[in-house]
Image (cartoon, rainbow, N blue to C red; front, side, top):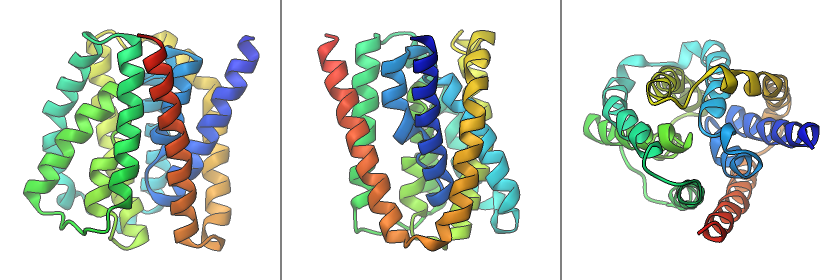
Length: 240
């Protein structure tokens, strides 16, 4: 039973890492809700660890496209958001958190489908960073607010800047989770078997992403997110 759980968790991480590397975000959106059903221990700290590793690799590869100065407001906003997200983990039940995960995923799907283009002004980046902190620390799903503002950027710039943002903010989230007792050595141990799957997802994405139309990748990611979010909502409602 334990081995099958790890294999399923690794498969979800593989898919999530593939999507994140291909489009710049999505690891937690794809993996978090179903991982939570396998074991609540997988959310949020292990996903934050995996996201940190993948983001470091992607940020280094796309470092010429990264503009840290443009991310400054979002990083500032992420700090209070992360603190609030950590507090939420201390006051909500498992069923509520599952429901929260599912709703966040569906919101992310809706946001990604919007035709309206928002310009990433400093004020909007500050707000997006705050919301990313709340969502990322409480549920590990911190990408959608930032992706909304940056989704119309050139592909390499989008992926590079999101990766750089996730490096910094994943470290923030892990620090807050440690403070609240939700990041321990046990979380590190259950994350280690998932890292090879994450690296394989990253490697495959880099090999095939240029052969797949961006529009097709976007549709695939949204479909995966939709199924994942609905599953989490159903499981959360069943737990009440």
